[in-house]
Length: 234
Image 1 (cartoon, rainbow, N blue to C red):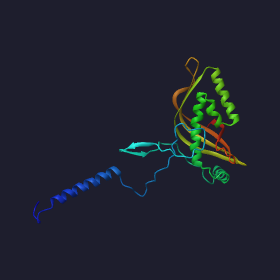
Image 2 (image 1 turned 60 degrees about the horizontal axis):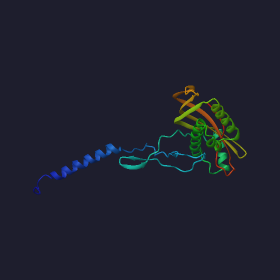
Image 3 (image 1 turned 180 degrees about the horizontal axis):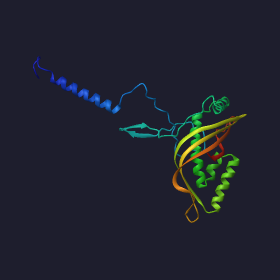
Image 4 (image 1 turned 180 degrees about the vertical axis):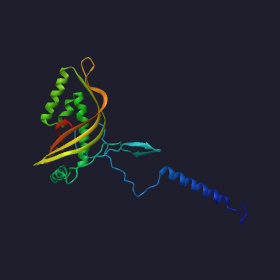
């Protein structure tokens, strides 16, 4: 140790170390500004989602980041909602007067779950999975298409690679009967194979597909399921 009048080298050394650590942490964590958005809330879809179109719970997807388990949601589709003053927005408001539990974002999350189930089940010919999610007329149309495919000895292979967006296109209310049309933009692989295993329709390549599906529900019914009543390419 030096005399009382000597230069405090140890304090200078500690100060340099402290300055280095501050700069290092700042480079790793960054600086917060007044323009940053708060973290967005995501509702990831649980694997094995059942036929309900109105899931209420959130299932965090835990991943390991920097040695700590943190809930990280996968990138989900866009969820813009109709303008409250638009016809769809006013219809949704009227629906909520009948069913206070109706939430447009939760509805879209459930509609996406139904979309995945229905597309996959139709390709696989899984009538049991389709039946709870379809109206009677839609169910008959889907079953006829599946039966025609089976009679021809054809197999359909469908993969949903990504859903880019799921938006409410229109909404209407007739008494207590609500209809909500959802526009899905998805990346899919769709190919139909003949009995000889060769493609007869579609292509083994990712294609962007836009679908317009209409879901219907009696808002006074204790059954919370929204059923598909119409589906077409948009």
